[in-house]
Length: 147
Image (tube, rainbow, N blue to C red; front, side, top):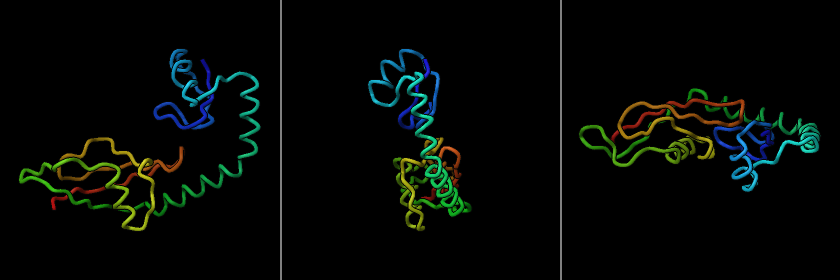
């Protein structure tokens, strides 16, 4: 079944994308939750008109995301965590600590935009991915050190 997403859905698509999903997923989850509508002729026509009206706004959002990405290029973070003598840290480092470290450097990035591929439970070097826009992502290296 073809649907139009009304908001960003992880691992599926972004707002206003027309995607193909299984009938049960669309009818039982996406549509009742208000995350999507069925992509019939009138909905597609309305989507095209809305996108035409928002084209300049979307272009500005893309430019803003590229500007933020340019400021984040070359940023390397060092995050301190309590660790044992073997290098295993107590707890883990997550996107909240990355966002706080970026804020200390003067970069205000929402923590929901930051993702870390692997769980950070040891001292070492890792990479975080910041998705500023569906076309703009920045990879930020960070090092976890023992306090």
